[in-house]
Image 1 (cartoon, rainbow over the protein chains, first blue to last red):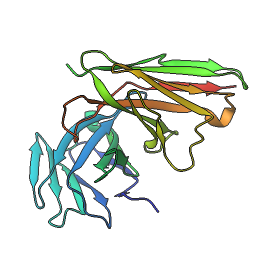
Image 2 (cartoon, rainbow over the protein chains, first blue to last red; image 1 turned 120 degrees about the horizontal axis):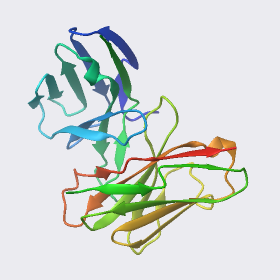
Image 3 (cartoon, chains in turn blue, yellow; image 1 turned 180 degrees about the vertical axis):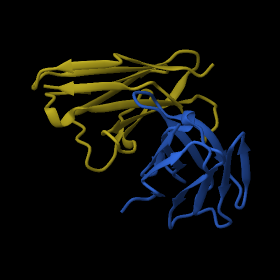
Image 4 (cartoon, each protein chain N blue to C red; image 1 turned 45 degrees about the horizontal axis):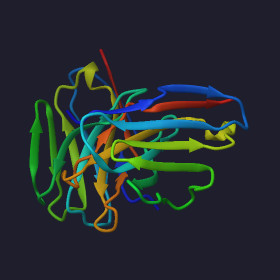
Amino acid sequence: TQLLEQSPQFLSIQEGENLTVYCNSSSVFSSLQWYRQEPGEGPVLLVTVVTGGEVKKLKRLTFQFGDARKDSSLHITAAQPGDTGLYLCAVRTQSGTYKYIFGTGTRLKVLA
Amino acid sequence: GAVVSQHPSWVICKSGTSVKIECRSLDFQATTMFWYRQFPKQSLMLMATSNEGSKATYEQGVEKDKFLINHASLTLSTLTVTSAHPEDSSFYICSARAFGGSYNEQFFGPGTRLTVL
């Protein structure tokens, strides 16, 4: 059973369209992160959300942490080809070595 | 700051050989480093957690005798894929958490693409 399920798995849209990516779990987390990864590179951190209901904005990207801290969403407004990539949510386990678990990933392609 | 490097960036080897991948924190000390494997079009799967000076903790299903991890210093961890086979071909990524840093923060290397013929 995957701890973090992302949807959709794949998304191909035209430049200028809006989209939302979801990250869902049945577990509660103290924080959640979103990353973007381009082919052949390591993931790059976009944001960390820590408070239930928290909303953070990064230019055209809006991130929200669910009230119960079990899920999160990433909304992109007016997508651009430069937004193309693999979007990953990740959480840190609550105990032990505090390792990080990644979601199943959403592959986004924005067409010009 | 907070740069993590990996070497090599790509490697091609014959089946049965061993390959060593290095992960270095260039401008900070990393008490903990993580090793991930990523197959094409898939997410990152945590393989093991490496703490400086102690044995690595492997995730379920990861063979510790096949994927040897050594974290001998606060700036270097190595992953050795022993007796590599074509099914070990993958993108291997490390990340590092800074000594005294936030538990929410890990810095990723650029990855190493391993192809086993």
